[in-house]
Image 1 (spheres, rainbow, N blue to C red):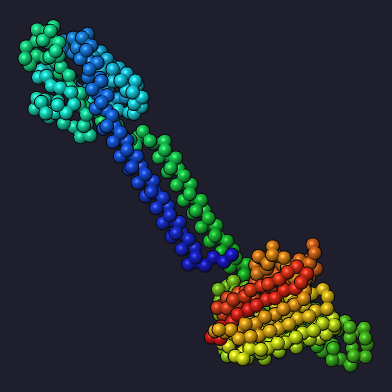
Image 2 (image 1 turned 135 degrees about the horizontal axis):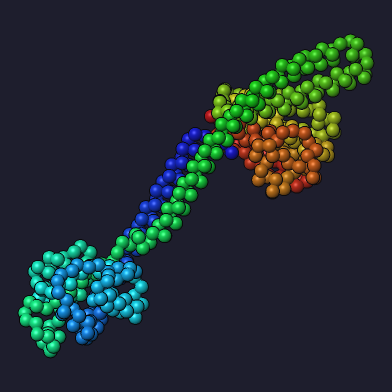
Length: 443
């Protein structure tokens, strides 16, 4: 397959856009996950904080510990971290973990709090925000901390304690969900790794395509130079064989005439194969330019057909020309169009094992002319027809390649037809022959 620079750039752009789009989609999914996680946290945590609050209020021993606390301490509790050495905080974390575990609340949390002996009492959740001491409100007014658990010892003070107003110890606890990215770091790492693998694989593919393209260009240059080097000896052989055939001494000897004819025929066959290689090298090089001029397609067909009349007659075959098109002048490259007709007739002769019966038909089309070449050869199955226009592919007769060639003829034919903005179709059945139909526009 040929890869032009434009094709490669388009592929690179398409994949780059796809990768960027994939990253964008992943980020959107991640943002939605964060939003769902946040909503879940905000809906469930207040309910569970209420349970924690009730348990702590009813735990007289723990409340006594709180009321006996002197001083002021800010603290942080993490869901999967060890609690501080402070016994009050150890018990608090244990109670929070216990409530969360009973409710199958398997989420990470962070508690930022203040335990202080010099604050007024305030209460749980939203009520605490409204009734809390303004100083405490400033302390706890933290971003992303929307759930509050506030506890002091008023009930205990009324029934047990001797604390006066302002002497009770109070908790202010604000819950927030920790960094969601950290919690999902493993998933993010896998996603980033897969994206990097995708980018690396694509980069390797592009580099390989560029390398292969350069190698292909070098190969074409080599073949071009090589075939041009063959041109000189082939021309010399053709010239020598022509002189030999005209020699009186050779004409008098059947054996020498046979050898001279053999040299001439093999020289022509070698020239034909070299020309095909040059034609395909020209197509591959990107310098394939048509030199269009107005030509008579019927005259061209008749001229090429005469080259095959002798071969077909020797095999007791027939070459029928049904040139029915009324508008048979078209704008085309005469050399390449000549090669198209020659290649198709050559294949029709080579791939016919019995007496060849070949028909060449032209007929008018809506905006051009249709050229049909039909034979009674070995034909092709559907599996062969899929690849018959591929370069170097050759249809087989039985299990053997018993017809010499490089498999370039039909590939070249299709390239020339495409260059003329035409179409080529094949209809064939095994052992029943083939029909190539070519549409060529007038202009």
